[in-house]
Amino acid sequence: MVEHNTIRSLDGRRFELRGEAFSTEFLTGSVTRFCPACLAEDEGAASRPHARRRGRLEWLLAPVRICPRHLQPLMERQRDAWDGKARELQLLVPETGAALQALAETLSTLWCSPRCSSTTTLCFLNCR
Image (cartoon, rainbow, N blue to C red; front, side, top):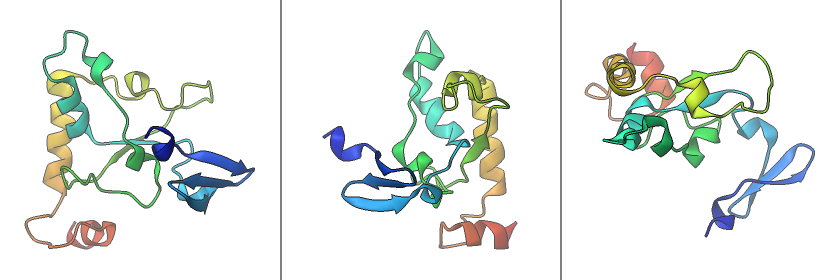
């Protein structure tokens, strides 16, 4: 099951996920996308908030711009230097608790889901 959900390199610029081949441009590259509401839910009542955080496979895919669970835009963060820790959520999203919830609430005020029936990026851009 884990292998089925693993992005594998085919060659220098081609990858495969679930039997589908795609180019490197289909991935987010060095940018890490995340949904603060998902991370807040992951933390729950944990004594060590960062320990329960987990990245989502769909956050790595460039066309995915909206959280399918919370129907709000994904946030993006990027480290300044390449240091091998490009996707560590603890480093990229140091916010926890109330600060993380505030990020989620900020995004939900930008999102126009009550006015639009679509959850596409185009809807987000047209309704802002």
